[in-house]
Length: 219
Image (tube, one colour):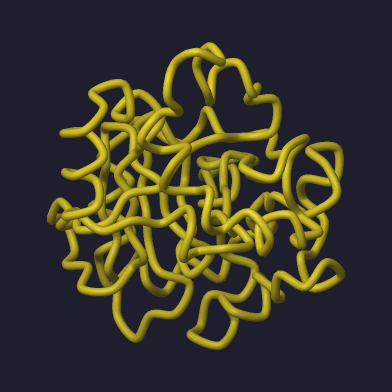
């Protein structure tokens, strides 16, 4: 009988978390988020929830304690700062001290305050199953809302929650090796290179990371 493999069920909808190139600037704490939004309500329009993968519990919604300043490649100076006779936004003021280091990144967008190009930024806003790159036991979570993660996590852009139960089961833990692809990855050069092994670009080997915990050819 024909059965559906995990690889077929997921297809190419597997992705790696983000690298900002300057975490101190783009990743902020809850207190900083509260301060920015309090000083400038529009800050909330470009700040998204962010998780690093630590403290995950299977089936359980992650605790949000950090946020990412989401200014992707293509984000313009016009939207980042207001008219010349108005003071800069709270986010612009926050990023300003990091200007020198941000400019030195090789993986930035068109401007120093922008993140690198990525073909799948929109996927972070869709329903998804998320998990750590390194696991000793099944720990998959379902996140229906927009949330970003770093490159210590991967996610499957799928809406079927039944897959979550399978992946967190003993059978699912044994079946992940049936996968045939590695996560799509945002690389420093441009969105056109999505899917290339990030080791070539200083981002680490995502496939190797999975294999270290029994996820060879997983997602």
